[in-house]
Length: 119
Image (cartoon, rainbow, N blue to C red; front, side, top):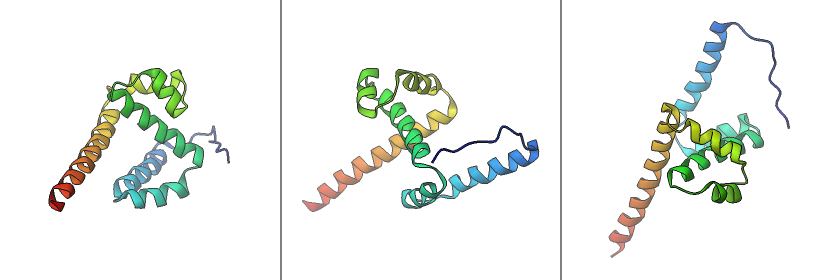
């Protein structure tokens, strides 16, 4: 399914309210299970894949993976990688990467603690 966006603008105040609802929905989603349930209904498969790949590109760039490695594994273009890389110094990308890295760190240490408790 291809999503089309109307070229007709809506009132700036209404636009702000509509975007605010969207941002609040994201903020109120508590678990990855809730997020999957909501976003699988609201976003097309293509939109979900595009967003997921962009986050993965940023993550792998932060891990110093090469463009070629990222292109081959994620099946994205050099243009996509460059676009993500250009934005990585902005606040939104920095926050997103901090959250991804924090989750990675927590998962790693959770496994280590569980291994230690089994001893």
